[in-house]
Image 1 (spheres, rainbow, N blue to C red):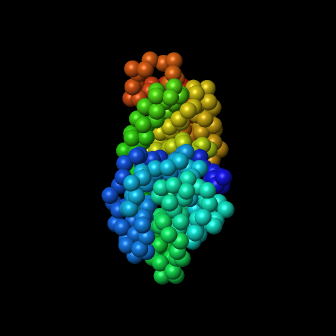
Image 2 (image 1 turned 180 degrees about the vertical axis):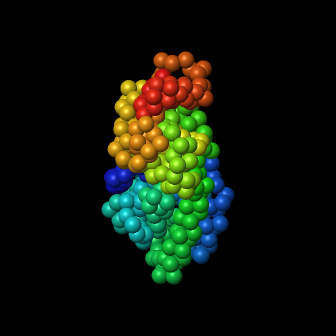
Image 3 (image 1 turned 90 degrees about the vertical axis):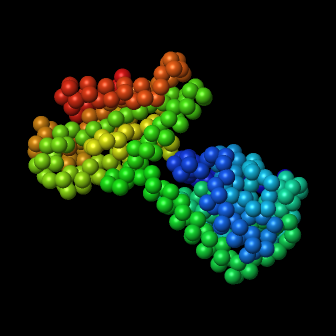
Length: 331
């Protein structure tokens, strides 16, 4: 028996990072091919891949020299690699207790040599590997190791640019475009798998008055502070916070029931008030937020679109404002 790698200690957050970077799709990405071509050519190996460890599989976002597109995670060399911080080099897989009877060693592609280096996202979580594979035993030379490290740096810089493209410049939260894509995707997944989905709209109360009293620079600093605080309250890897419009943020809570979402909404409202940010122009004398939320479950009308769910959350937010602000309501 070969030894399958255990899951990463932060697997849920790691998986969420893959989804945020749009790396879980089954399509190849030619933008990564230059790097894998270089690895294969310079090391003189049979194959080179940029491998993403996704759920119960490993998938090749770029591959040179193999006909495979994916394999099971329990047979994955790369699942071992992402558990460490350094390059994993296996000179002869048949002599390694972890891989000697691995199906990828005993059968196609008959791996004997493997060198993989972890690829980390902007949050330093490993999402996959850049690796070289050969069907003959061999050693990795020092200059080849240096090349792999250089190409790793280039690949991580590419992923950083991808991450920045989905972030709002002021708040650091996800931007509206990413929210729209994520929300629609989670909507489809919820209906397909009969899972609940909740969304919360969070608005800073009397924020126009705050800007008028303190100036827009102070307003921007406070908006950024509150946005960071809201995101920090989300404890599950699959939840996201995005800037919606103006001083409004939107929270998407996949696989979250209406009652649990209501609890999150109340917690967000209370936690912002506890920040005790002065706001003399507000009746509360402090920065507070109003929260409106909505949820859908498998018993709801399947024709109800994600835009309707968002509209219900917006209506709940308006009710909270009309009722005096600094409160959380669900519809």
